[in-house]
Length: 226
Image (cartoon, rainbow, N blue to C red):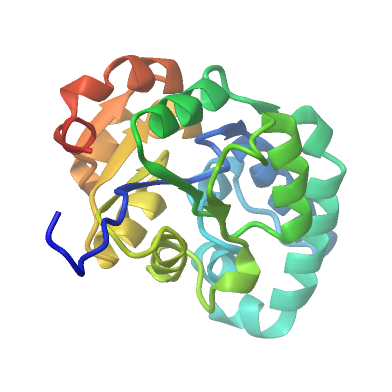
């Protein structure tokens, strides 16, 4: 290594909901109930297709600008309360912790790239038993705009010291946020999107599960290079 230059470890930026925690459908149900409180009924499939966006983007995306102007903050608060009652039904996806351990073993910095509330993130860090293993994490307090805007990816990459990085996620919104930050995304199917959809959105590789991804790391150029 040339004198005067420091080495920055490459980083894996991991989405949380739908990637490490099986929570996408609980989030969809929470939003469904929140909207119904205000006599707005939208089909569950439509809500699910937008899970992965943060609440700042979600209301406009599913219900339009007028609903956002009138009810946006109330809906976000209601959805958070509803999800709080569903959190104990969410569970780590098989192999989630083992993937993080393997990434660390390979010398990567691991940052959870999430726009969850700090309370939700703390809860799931304990469920995953990753608090002492991951290098860093982000929450909604670290970003002005959630996915598909790149803010969370920039924040996570900054916490990884700004070196080479790859996103690992489960949805179109992860892929778009990473692409808007100049990064590639490896996806798993655990968020409820199909392989073809994720590839069409720009995923460089798609795996059925976290377990399959961990077993296939040597097939991916980024991880071989790391």
